[in-house]
Image (cartoon, rainbow, N blue to C red; front, side, top):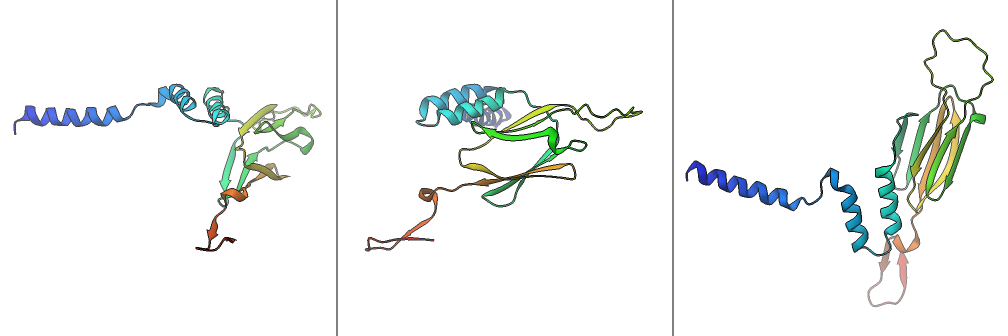
Length: 169
């Protein structure tokens, strides 16, 4: 087999592989539009996903999202220098919102100020089945415990063959 034939087969396999990949990173808006056209009852989910893609993302304040189990998550937000009275945590329309205000009661003159104490608003989109379980603020670390609620119709059900009873596990 000559080098031309090898090159042609390789080129054909590369074209076939790349033609299977219809959506690229730059095509996410087109992908979401196509998903919205071919699904029923998922329009709100697609709109939330599209809003995440188009919204500006800030890296302040730094945070960790910890998966403790399949149903429990913990969001840890570093808020050194803030006080409880400066921080608001609430949820609204499937959004978790953490806001902090600057308190201007500090009259100190700083030679160097390395801890940012600026006002901010940070939001995270929550799934329909995620609820806020507990909020703590200890030693400059805001911890928000989140719990996924599994509805009864999604839990495992074991059926006894030939009998009309339902057993749950």
